[in-house]
Image 1 (cartoon, one colour):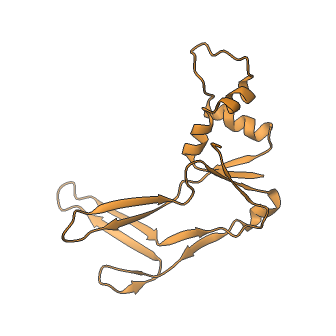
Image 2: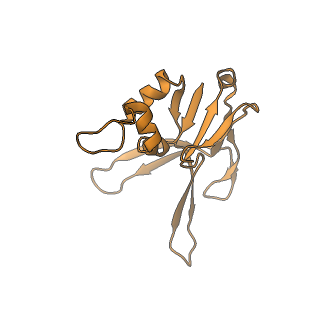
Length: 154
């Protein structure tokens, strides 16, 4: 089966007492007094002992405001909140989904497809030119009823 979670969630799980006791044993005394396990040990335990494959997913939606009367702001919303784990049974992995796209307004106010390119040229030495491609999109996950969405910290 597949476990999908953010990197932050995976890191926080390494500090949970129940996880540390499961991996190291309840009588384990760390020479440094640490109460956590290494991420590599946590991944190995989850893979070999529990049979899960771990994938980290840290995508986020970023939106900006730029009004004349107020300073610009940048807000980020994670698609998979911290502490949430999605478990996908093996038979459902082939149906994970796709990226949905939509039209958006460009700088002139015209609607364009979700894909766009950008170019930034510096007007001072060393006159660097940077190019990139972006997309206005979001994940669409088409899972069956057998997918679980759990709170990892509960």
